[in-house]
Picture (cartoon, each protein chain N blue to C red):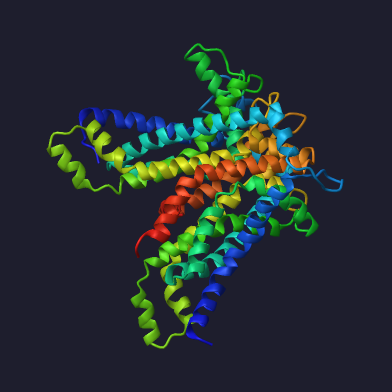
Length: 294
Length: 277
């Protein structure tokens, strides 16, 4: 046996165990959803090939289009807020101060909180009549109390708030670590030339954090697009499907109505959009891995 | 790095305090309410000075003994998934860091791309297949699923950390007559212990919090803590907030303490993991 063969064998033995779960539990099922989307698969009945019928029915379904636009709206709203908040926090934290470490730890707190616990806390704070949020907005600002359980627009505000609360530490950390990587001299020489803080942000921080912001944005979208737990625990898609997301609709089709074919059509849609969003990131990584001279 | 101008100096503390209130107040408010008597939990306006009590914990122990069982289930899944992930990702990370061929490059890219799949999409084909295999409602189904969603990130993390172990160290070990196994155990693993720790942290935090996969794949025999909390949140006869707060606090405090102790690794790992893979 040649030395090269032995080497390749060693490599295969090292990497294949890690690939195995990915192939068996992700890749094969993912391909199977494509197959399933062309069939009528109802629990207890034999499978039947139906061509594009699942997709046709899906596109005609008004609940689907509502869920689709909700998902898009939800993703844009949460990602935009996360990035803006993350950027603001990162800029403020990047100039050294006394309690920097402690502040970072405290900003990371929501990262530890399970979606279920987050919903418990926010439901409690938002309880009509007696919750602390109503106390503040009624007592201090004289506004009407919020009633998110029955008014869809308010339900959305609450869901987005909750999601941003859970997810913002992630965007913060990506942007923060990119800002502290910028060399001090760059700023110092700009300030010697008479630049002010705003110019320092506009012409140094902003352009140099573009890659990090891109990563945070793409991951933000990919993760917002698949989000299920927040909405499911909070509203289950209600009232009247008004807070339905593609993920919750998929769940209902599959595990409430046992229509696995129809659910697969939604699954294929979600996968395609996810990879469309991730394409830029994957292409960059691909170039970095294979086309850059080593 | 910004100049400490007067505006910067006055504005920063104000904005920072607002940010910290936003991130921490909800959790602090939960902790406080856990120690209030039920009558006081919904006192309007909310009280901040009160006599702390443990009645909510007593009620939790009496009425929801299953909660403590589900905490132990969460712990089993978290430990199992992190051990399995480390076992699979360490050799993969080593191969990705030390060797180079077409197959490896393809695998590396595959690992990167496969992370993008939305997990909920996979539940549709997996649920029938795994129930046929008798895996639904077992520890294994969660351990395997959590592992497969983290093994690619972890392999990348390991690779990044192992890249920093200089080849010379390994070469010196070869000259001293160490075989491949000894090299790995005596040189590579001690030096990439940070990657192993970061992986364990990620998987443990994820498994401790995870709701969606648990909701779909387990629930009767095996039940993780988020599932029990969800059940306590949605009974027909109305939520009893006292024990629910006690349970939430019990679920949250261990992981907060854990994060506090491993903070440095977590921040480092999140940076590496997010940007590199």
